[in-house]
Image (cartoon, rainbow, N blue to C red):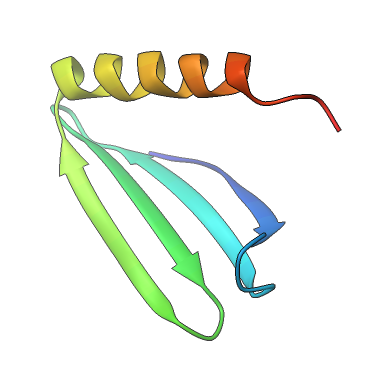
Length: 66
């Protein structure tokens, strides 16, 4: 199953970027894509997913709304 992609402009390079999430029975795939600079996808399990979510929640609380 694919989750809706999130498109944005990379704040460092100005390149068009996208985050894609896909789910298999036992793993989550997280892909980061830059239009001009390539893609990377990593696969991990539920434990690591919980850690990523917690890290993103901490990051969100540290970033001011713009």
